Image (cartoon, rainbow, N blue to C red):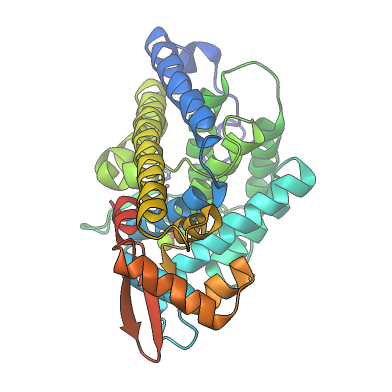
Length: 361
Ligand SMILES: Nc1ncnc2c1ncn2[C@@H]1O[C@H](COP(=O)(O)OP(=O)(O)OP(=O)(O)O)[C@@H](O)[C@H]1O
Ligand SMILES: [Mg+2]
């Protein structure tokens, strides 16, 4: 119910007051997280080919983020679905791939417009959920405790209130006033978005996509390579509890620190991953140069890193070579143990197993 003192179902408009969200503990953690993220941004530029990381990392995030909603698939299924022409793709895998599509939809949106508004967010959610229900119009949405079924939180269900809150949310994420550091704003906006809960479903996943887009919009990363999905799964109970405690206890500090720690940890993990990939890339180049000097080319090795699952057709179009040459290349790379072939239905795929294992882990 909307009343004069609680106009939006108890959800205040943004921003919260500075002394709640800029405590010393928050600011300390914020600078650690910002350092880690800046290091990640710099290191990502050193990758020989940006697509190496993006594809692998986006798939991993799609998988992790969807798991929060209990949509489970495997890395094998995901890569198979991307590689095979006539393979069977199960429902769960399709759903996870939609997360990836929704993310790229959002990325294109902010590239074209330079901002993210409600229309853009509705588009993202539409791709994700494959329906055009849009912003909630009917009451009845409630967040329930998974095991007891007890209602934990009822988001605003008055259309007018949702619109006002979304407009206020838009203003907050697009303003570049230096009121709060960007990473603190990231945590604030994520709480607010989840609390507005503008859609019937997909609010968690849409919110996690907004998070990475927000980092790109603010130039803290150039490409979508930092994801909190894995961190949130690992710390899921805290995630739910802390969201709720902002509401019930005004516990902004713990929530913001939780998110900031996620950014620091995930940046560090991603940095390590990039270093490992860079090493493997160099080693693979050395090996191919040594053992297959007549076939070796940097483009060939790059291809095998952009497509950890490759096949003749991919290599043909990527290097503009004929099938016979592509077959020869792939077989030779298998002979020197850079690739491992696997028959899948009528096709044969070639797996860069060492890279695949790094991306998967
Ligand atoms: N107490 C709470 N207050 C505000 N938001 C909450 C609360 N508890 C959970 N949420 C948010 O609601 C999301 C779930 O909403 P919804 O089912 O619409 O999203 P989803 O994308 O389908 O699911 P999931 O986030 O589990 O993948 C959670 O991910 C979380 O972000
Ligand atoms: Mg859901």
